[in-house]
Image 1 (cartoon, helix red, strand yellow):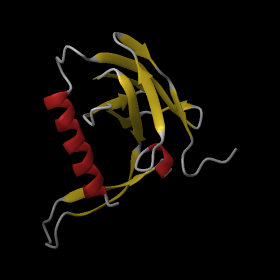
Image 2 (cartoon, rainbow, N blue to C red):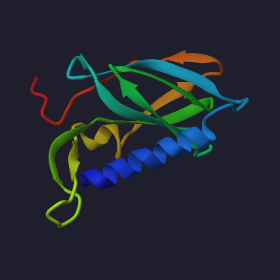
Image 3 (tube, rainbow, N blue to C red):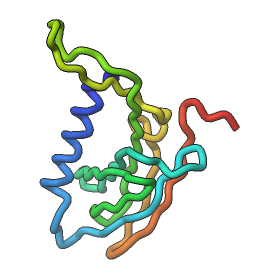
Image 4 (cartoon, rainbow, N blue to C red):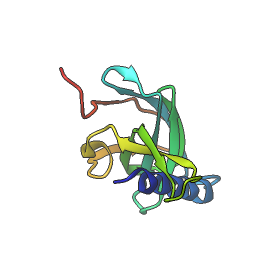
Length: 137
């Protein structure tokens, strides 16, 4: 998936989180840390999809996240795009440069994730551990 498509996916998911993830009387909070290859994930996103199909997304900053979601078994997706370069936004001499990103985590953490969390009413804590595509044990 190209950098622009990933960016649009994240922005769209974040918009859903802002519109549908706040203030619901049946919502719970989940917070925790995300580590990749044993180190806190500096920058990424985490998405929880509730049993009713509603998804909410938040950012991971410095390995930490906090999100509001619906109680029940939530499917979890973690994404950690990294900038791999820059390219012209369009073909013209004065075209601005845009970042090109690539996903650093294997699909099993995001697009083909089978990660789940049983979210209870009230506050929940969950730490996630992942390995990057380039991890060598």
